[in-house]
Length: 352
Image 1: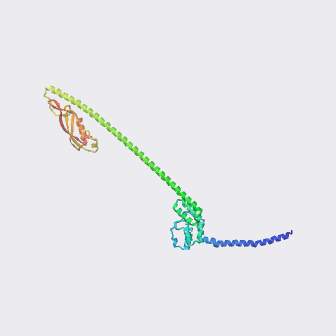
Image 2: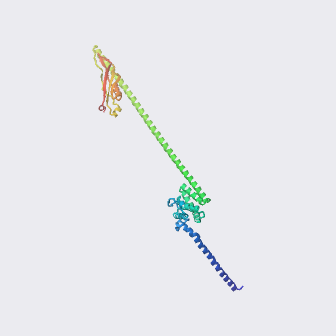
Image 3: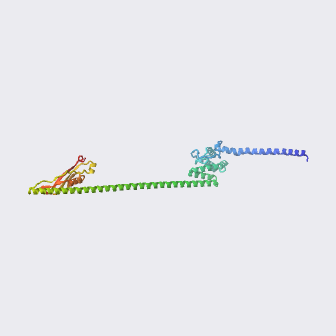
């Protein structure tokens, strides 16, 4: 084959390709310009020039608090303007009554075919869902439920809603379990506190009972010792009286019947014990007693005639007279029983 013919054919083929390539490039450029003019530019105008407000920007929970607005009184342009403002301020789905989702939904309610609102809702749906998930993790369950219901108005069949509802239920269950655990722990602490209080009370009651038993035993021992002392004193008095009687009898026999006649006389000092209660209360007083000095020198039939104050010093006075030692009254040298009366004074100065 002639090589010159082949080169000429290839040259003609390359010349034919160039116009086709140029035409294709022109068509692509025209489509790009048309997309910019009719699709991208309107959408950028819708979401605003601030790149931070683009739907692809992650939604944070630190959204600016904004008061609810009256969407019913707004026109379509007002609603779209408020929606763009909310997007700029990242109020995509919260707070309630003043967020982009609610504004766009109101636009679709007034004009169901509004493409701008429909596109914005579709593009921001995933990021709004992410916001809901963060709210769930923060356990703001009421707000999460509101936002899920709002997403359902945009795309009720979206599987993301099923996932979000499952997470919401799981978090609620986890919170219930934690609260129940805390309640159980509090009950256990209360029970332990009650048991400790009961144990402390039982220990205190036992200590009081032991002290009362010890005090009673000490009182009984003191009473027994007092009885023993009284018996010893009585025996001593009896012995002395017998001796005195014997002496009197001997004197009478020696005197031939002309013995001594006299009243009974104490042979020991009458010293009453000051009652401890009166001593603590700084009380003073007196007791007037009537008693019989028997022929053997013992004392009996002791009676309280009068006292001031009553029943404070009575027992101490009676005990003092009972412990006193007497020489019996004598008549013609013979010992006889006699009645006597005595007033015993109780002075604090004498108790020292």
